[in-house]
Amino acid sequence: MYAVLDIETTGGKFNEEGITEIAIHKFDGHKVVDQFISLVNPEKDIQPFVVNLTGISNKMLTTAPKFHEVAKRIIEITEDTVLIAHNAQFDYRILRTEFRRLGYNFERKTICTVELSQKLLPEAESYSLGKLVRSLGIPVSDRHRANGDALATLKLFKLLLSKDVNKEIIKTVIKAETLGELSPRQLDIVEELPSEVGVFYMHNKDAEIILLAKSSNIKKRVNQYFTNNGNRARKIQKETRSVTFEKTGNELIGLLKENEEHIRNKPKYNSNYKRKLFSFGIYSIPDSNGYLQLKAEKLNNSIHERIATFNSIVSAENFLHAIREEFTLCNKINGLSHAKSNCSKYDDGKCLGACIQKENVEDYNKRVSDVITKYSLNDKNIVIVDKGRDLGEKSVILIKNGIFKGLGFCDLNYQINNLNILETIITPMDGNANTNHIIETYLRKRKVQKIIDLNI
Image (cartoon, rainbow, N blue to C red):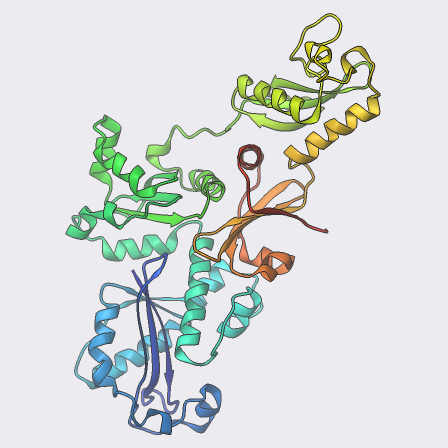
């Protein structure tokens, strides 16, 4: 659990500043579950340059509560959380100073989004909050006011969580929270999980990931692991100390994240994960008459263009039957018919005669090219847009030159349409034959909100 906060102060000498405004958003890693926002009477004057910067004046604070009146609420909302702030050292020092004046020792673990950004966004030109969020296309209002800056920090932190592919943030927090045996709350972790699509991670006592998986219903899938009776399931139950998760908004993002996480983390109980997710391909091969054949074959080092991949010969041939109907192709040309003359679909009027050289080669090959354009990622520069994790959010997948480059989430259309911002928002991921297989297979079976062609 995190407490994302921002504090505005009077300015002045070190350790003599007073708090003028505070905003805290309690964040469970997915949504805000509580918040506290308040002006605070510092019982001292605000420095003139701070008044100009924040717009908070001495007059505005005369009726505001004093710090001792809000101290209990701050303790309650931050209890058992890790404090998140942009330049956390400053905000944490100010809070500790105020509590020390009350005779209370306020201690919390902290994470600084400046330091995180320097690690996870090494190409950023500036790490000041305003410039950084603007470069990322993150909307922000009320800059230099506690709630405006806290909300900007929260959105930045969500982005950094998605960028943290090694799960260093979560591992650090789990190590801090998980000491010794499971707490009663952790024993009931299934109830804390969402019934939504995403990827979940089972951690042992050292916070290491021992199993991960994509599921369309995280709560249901984890519950199955905890209730199964097999030897493997019992080992997983015994070793699991906590379960974290990432909502992905849709199945395709979940599949791509699952694939990447398996390669990166190599969890001990996912040892049977396939290195290659497919074993058959459909190749485009000209026949002796110049017609382009689409042949289903076991994977090989053919010089011919491979336009689609499948995990069985049956699914590859089923695809060929489907595109024959969609694009009026010929079963004999594609190796699905071994008729000595014309294929049976010619007699039905569903083949235009390529099997007996009655159809013009260029006309037939144009339709084959249409198949390749529709169903293959080869040489494409596109953005796949689909629903995100929350209402109004969209997921984006970037493909450049036919290669998967990464994925991310955004709220605004201009973030998608501006390639420079888009490339900053997405989490870079390794594109390879497996990722292309995942994306192409998904697009053959499911619809997405839209696919945008990039002019590169």
